[in-house]
Amino acid sequence: MATPNPQNILRVAGVLVANPTNLALDPPHGGVELGITRGLIFRTGIKSTQVTAEELGGTTVESYYTGENVVFSAILREFDPDAIVDIFPNASVGSSGDPTIRYQPDGVHQSRPGMRLSGKALKLLFVPKADESHPYVLIYKALPAVEETAEIKLSFADEIGIPVMFIGIPDDAASRKVYEVGRKEDISLT
Image 1 (cartoon, rainbow, N blue to C red):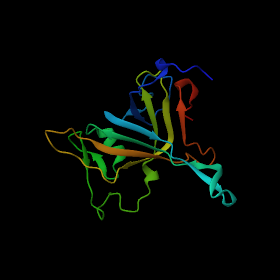
Image 2: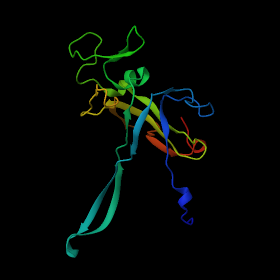
Image 3: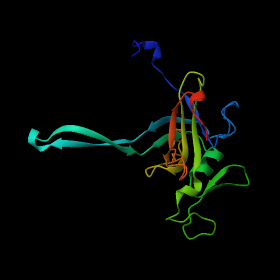
Image 4: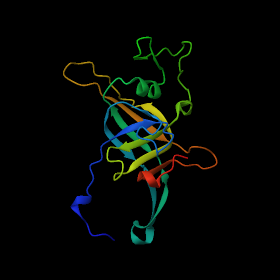
């Protein structure tokens, strides 16, 4: 085990990239940067089940790893067309070049309630600013979603901040990859 060193404490700033294709390319690695964000949090959602012994007064005597529910959350700080179209179920780029979000559950070309979000799935990559020394986070198949309590603040006093999340699911039936966290040279986009 290494000797603790305060110089190893990390403050990791970075950007989110949709559908990267090649880590050998400069950021955004052949993908599309999803605008300016803050409050980036990667949650592995590791679950475990404890086994207790009745004869020991219900004391835990074992614990079993039972899987993970991966979520990457962020706050969008701008009305970025790529981010809005990729994340909102009913968004498109208007003739102005800016995004438009619509909700009309019985409308033509609208995503109706009950729509499977896997149709909007994307490969999500967190690219750290110090990309040679800080960890990357890759979710192979991320379902984009807006948090249910999301608000779009329209005020001079506050910046726009749209809470979004990406739910990691297995990428396909063969590999079932969900995520990797590590240095750029240690992770694979495939």
